Amino acid sequence: MNKITLISIALMALASCNNGKTKYDASGTFEADEIIVSAEATGKILQLNFEEGDSLAKNATVGSIDVLGLELQKGQIEASLHAIGEKTTDAGPQVAILKAQSATQKAQIGVLEQQITDADREWIRLKNLVKADAATRKQWEDATGQVAVLNKQLAVAKEQLGVLEQQIASTRASVTLQNRGILSEKPGIQKRVEQVNDQIARGQIKNPAAGIVLSKYAMAGEFATMGKPLYKIADVSEMTLRAYITGAQLSSVKTGQNVKVFVDNGPDKLKELPGTVTWISNKAEFTPKTIQTKDERANLVYALKIKVKNDGTLKIGMYGEVQL
Image (cartoon, rainbow, N blue to C red):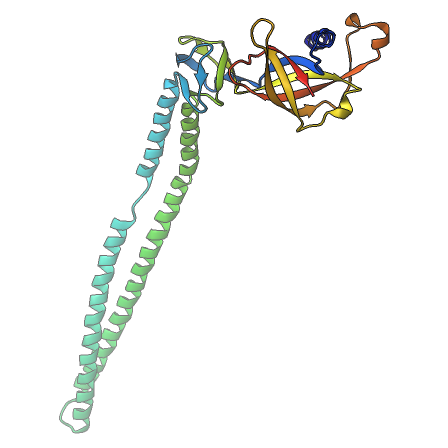
């Protein structure tokens, strides 16, 4: 019905203009791209710092919503994140004890190796003395037994050193595996913190585009739910004149074409503004039968949009005429 009314007004104005001195090729009304800004968080509206008619800058913070519950939730999640770090085990103390035992064992091996060297030297000396009948065979046999005992002690000591080194590696691997299982929970909790931070940030009402506030739907103190409309804004620095042309005029119009737009400028005065055709409908519409003669009822009209730079005089719904 609104479209039919708009076409009716445009055609009546076009007919009246054609009867006067100035001829216009199309008529219509000005409109702008309107944006309805909605709440992105749920809670009490703490501030909404603007009124209808105010000019707002893009990305300006124009209000806030109470997100205390989310901040408390964030604190709880961060405490859980800290607790994960407390659950991890440090392998350092256990490894340090085992390393100390390993160092002692290595020192003992060094002592045994020196004792074996001395015992071998004594065994060779006694062997030569036995050949020279300067020592008894029993002395040489005792030296032989002593060398064998020392070698067995050295083998046991080296085996114990190997066990200690395995224990060190096993302790490190066990603690690493245990900590890995605990720390695997950390990325998920960090993502939850980031998610809550994003929700908290949405408590700040940011204006998405520069423009004039057309309507204000909420007030400070009201409770907002996610998706609730807060206000409507439109950029009126450049307006769109939506007009209609007949099928006969269609061939003389193309997108990007510069045209003349006329608007009222006081009693019996018109103001001329430059405009550019940005869109032409590819679908024809029948003109309303209530304003046409029988011969004109078959006429079709096509909608077009004309961008006009607003010098401050243009308003949404304002009437304008076009010369192609």
